[in-house]
Image (cartoon, rainbow, N blue to C red; front, side, top):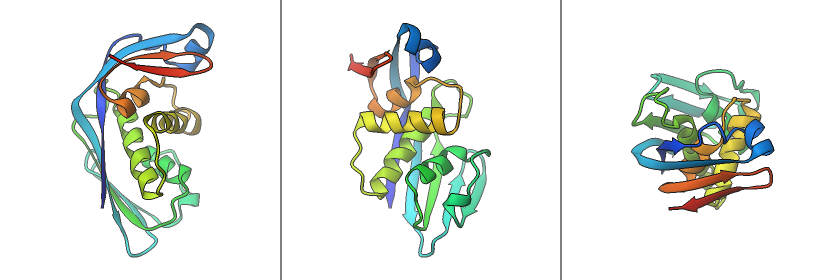
Length: 177
C-alpha cells in the first residue's frame, strides 16, 4: 500500500501572473503558503489487471480495463490522465479523498495532481524531485487536459510551506521564505 498526501494553498498575491500566456510575455510572481488541509491518495495492488478509482468526494467508483482506451473528459479526468502519463497497466485500487470541497479556491486540483504524480511515480519506482512533480503535474493539467489555469497550485503543493514563486519564460523558481 502506498499513501500520498499533498497540501492545498492560500495565495497572498500574484494570482493570474502564473498563467503561461501572461508570464511568458511579462514574467510573473506569486506569494503563497500551503496549509494543513490535504488531498490524500491511496494505492493498493489488485490481483487482476483492473484499475479501480474510488473518489469519496464525488461518491464515484470506476473500473478501467485498458488505460489506453480511457477518455479524459469526465469527473475523474485527473487520475486517469496521470495513469495514462505513466502508462500504468498493472491492476490497482486508488482511493481519493480531500479535506476541502471542490471549488474552494485553495488550489485543490493542483494538490490532486501532485499527490497522484508522486503516488504513481513512486509505484513505478521513479524518484521524482519536488520540481519534477510540479512540472509533470502542470504538464498534465495544462497541456494534456487543456485546462485554462496557471501553475502556482502545482508548485505550491509540490514544495509545501511559504514560497515566493517566480514564473519566467525560461524557468520557474521557488524561493522558500
